[in-house]
Length: 130
Ligand code: 5GP
Ligand code: ZN
Image 1 (cartoon, rainbow, N blue to C red):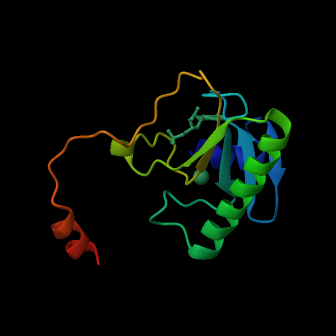
Image 2 (cartoon, rainbow, N blue to C red):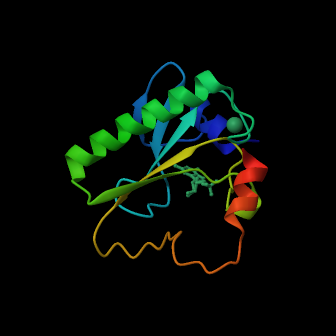
C-alpha cells in the first residue's frame, strides 16, 4: 500500500492546494514550516531515479507554481525545494515527491550544506562524474 497513491485515489483525505493532469500538491500532514507542501506525480514512481522525464518536468513546474502561490500568500523569506531519495537520505514515502518548504526568519529548521570539513578531492570527483 502506498499512502500517496491512496491519497491520489481519494481513499485517504488530504488538503489539496494544486492539481493538473499529471500532478497533485497537498499540504504535508507534518508542517515543517507554514505552507509546507508536497508535489506528487499521479503515477507511482518510487523515487527521482525511477520517474520518467516528462512527469518529472511536470512535477517541477508544479512545484514552482506552488512556491509562487505560497510566496504571494505567506510572503516567506525564502524556500527550500527538496527531494529525499532513499532511506539514507530520509525518504519515508516511496512515491516520488518534492517538498516545497517556505522559509521564515526564526523558523528553527536547520538544512545546511556549507561548513562541512570532509577531505574530498574535488579534481578527482569532477573527473569521475564528467
Ligand atoms: P519524505 O520523508 O519521504 O521525503 O517525506 C514524506 C512526507 O510525507 C513527510 O514529510 C510526511 O509528513 C508526509 N506524509 C506522510 N504521510 C502523510 C499523509 O498521510 N498525508 C500527508 N498530507 N502527508 C503525509
Ligand atoms: Zn504511490
